[in-house]
Length: 143
Image (cartoon, rainbow, N blue to C red; front, side):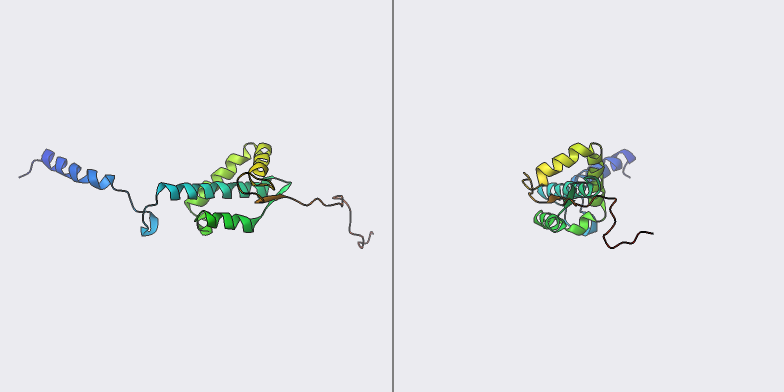
């Protein structure tokens, strides 16, 4: 009969190599390499910035077609940014940018504006309207 201490040592010896093996990615896919994870994280950062710009930078508007192309170039499925862990990560980045909105908007233009250093023309300045906000259309009736 094997003593309990010896049995425990054998089981621990078997569990060590199993624990050292990388666990498969969700859905049965192979575990991703560090470069792929870096690209996915960069895609989440970019999605977070675009979400932040769309909601918090009054002078800016994202070019969503260019955004989708940038995400595709990173080899990330845009649907991964719409739900699940990658979406949660991108929301976290959006919240971080909210801590200093003025500085974040400025940084967004530096990186992604007309002369952006990361992805030029990803965001643009909104067209200014000549009409003051309180004006009524010319053909409206006054009662």
